[in-house]
Amino acid sequence: MNHMNAREIAKERIERLFDLAEERLEQGRGDFADRYIELARRIGMRNEVSLDKDYRRRYCSNCGSFLSVGKNCKVRIDSKNSTVNYQCEGCGEIDRYGFKD
Image (cartoon, rainbow, N blue to C red; front, side):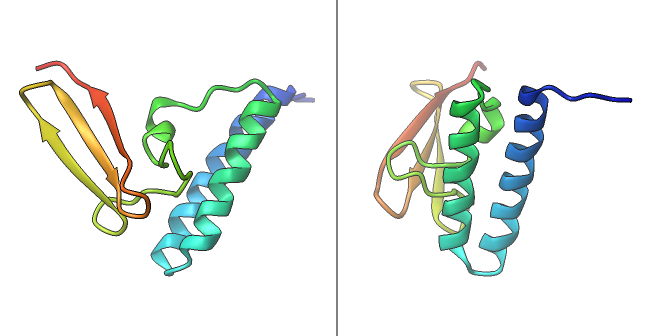
């Protein structure tokens, strides 16, 4: 019998909640998408599971909104500073992530 520990279950739930957030945003239900992200972050904190880098870039660090490029988020590349800038259109916050050439 395959027994999963709490962290493995938490990772699966987080992944599912991000998938659901994507679906809801496609349906025009950004309020549900934001709620799913809030729940995923809580599950991660409660179970001491770090969100993958890809997931951390999919929500605003300021207001917690689920970000989708072209819908509620602008992405710009700043080659001078070697960063990718994600700007939330909800609150205006800019999250910067470094990259290498």
